[in-house]
Image (cartoon, rainbow, N blue to C red; front, side, top):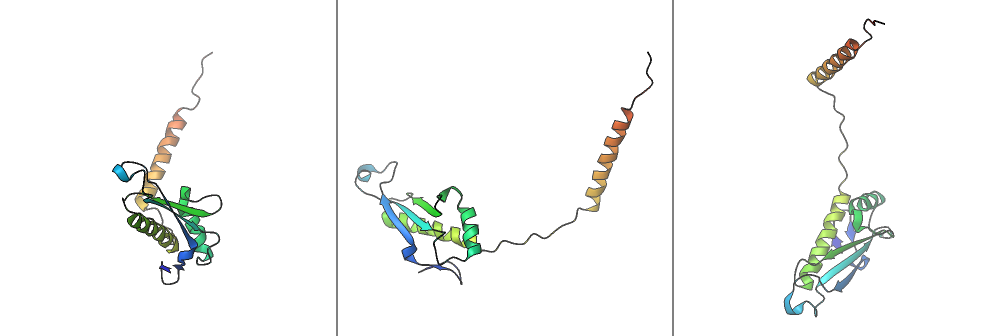
Length: 140
């Protein structure tokens, strides 16, 4: 089990791992060793996630989320499979933790007295400009 918070833990069987060859420089190992990892986590079918966390996670995942509701995370920063695997899992756990944190409710605020006065002053100045544009005496 992968611990996320007090109430949420992910089962390791819910995460599918695939090892592929990493792109970029790698010396002699680049064409022999599959050191990059791609992990997949099915958000919509996961029994571990409450509904509100699931909805926030889908929003936070962005382009990492497929149409089927699967989060795909690629990791190829490091030269070893183990470090790339740990990196990908850390990124997934951090994403789920951010989704599990309840959003802070918005506390309504009022504009300051000075900002209200500036707004009204600007409106009256604009109104005066428009009044001066009024039709003056016409000579035919």
